[in-house]
Length: 268
Image (cartoon, rainbow, N blue to C red; front, side, top):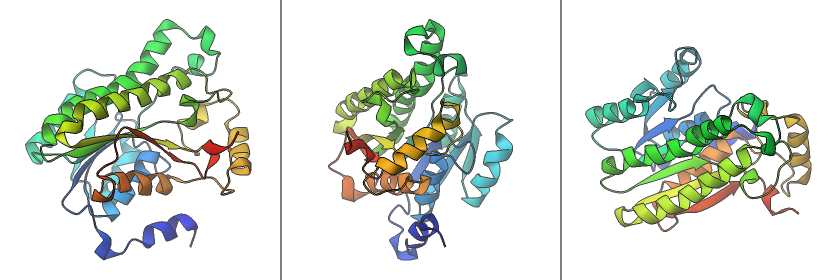
């Protein structure tokens, strides 16, 4: 049994602290997605799930995972297409009537802008990256707010490149920095409604999105060598931390960026 399986199996049936909670997960693409790791932990802890898929081409990869997790709701959601995110929330309102957790694990930039220098990025490419990777989190929060009548938690996925220069991260660095700032402002605005807001900053992970970065294999190797814990994190590590932030144990924490990276972010 690998360490990832051990971490999940260590959660006993009596530890279902999220039983009765309802969680929306945006951004599952396949079984290697960070969003899937989070959904898997949430479900293990008893949460009821709503899961989205990008489009019909993605559906065959996501639908089996939704069945595995007994997701109550499975719906298409391309945040770049007007009305799709709203349709997801309409369905949640109709079928559930309330929402406790909303997790945003979506990022995109056109390949030519992502793999080139920031200084050479196009206006359209920057706008698209900012809209999909950052402003869609604002839109998600706006739709979630009226459904979180008893409070709730909003989670977004960031990366170390938001605060430090990571070679080849390029355009996504400023975009993730904007996302982390957005988390802080939303935490301020929604705090009176007992809605907490967090950015999760995982260390390098072998996801489909990350594969678009130039020399990503080199980044993975260097991360494992430099991290104080001496190993890379996995999607369940991110899920366990995300789940903690949705529980009463973290009820006085909000507006944070939480690093799940084996200590990599503390290294010079």
